[in-house]
Image (cartoon, rainbow, N blue to C red; front, side):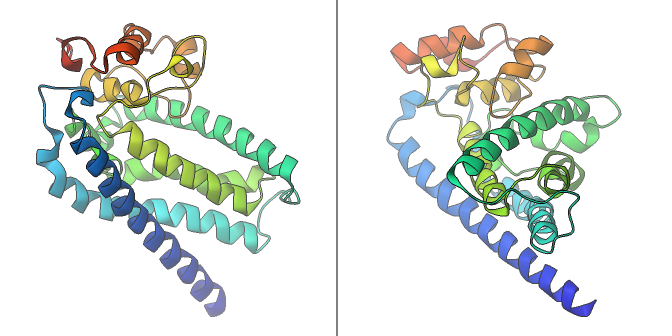
Length: 257
């Protein structure tokens, strides 16, 4: 028993250390890029950077939960404690299970996110929404309960999906970069691939969620928001404007914010 606990703590320490390293490394790289292109700021009239130090402190705390979820999922898979055997790692299984995992996670994230916006649970999500103009530092600025609800996918997925542990880790890495870029507040990625009929999204998608609150709950894709009627009505038009001008209408501000 003591050996198992020690093994898990090693998994946990590695997961937390890597997550913290990626948090700072990715953020500093994006801030350097953004400083050269102020015209790409979505909400020109707001400066979310004023919350940076508070968000860093909260992120370092909430990452303890995120690291715990991914460490527990990896630990359970490596120790053979899951209900299903992971597929042998091949090119086809890697591509298939990464796609399956991303689709499953997006559904989990959408419905979990909507749940956190209900009157009963919003108090656990409100801390994240103090960042009306999100920045890279906002990505993990969550309450611990909120972090667990959104990130516990990495804990339970290995029990019911035959996902190789390497692909679970790769998915988590993609989720980190996707989430950080999505919170960055600068639009470099608008294209036809991020608007109708494509299910992909760009930074404007999640930025609208922070500034306009009741829209755009999903993570990787716009499918659930389109089906659920929660896509911001101006999302596709905002993306189209950024494709040609690099600046959203009215600097991304809205009377709803």
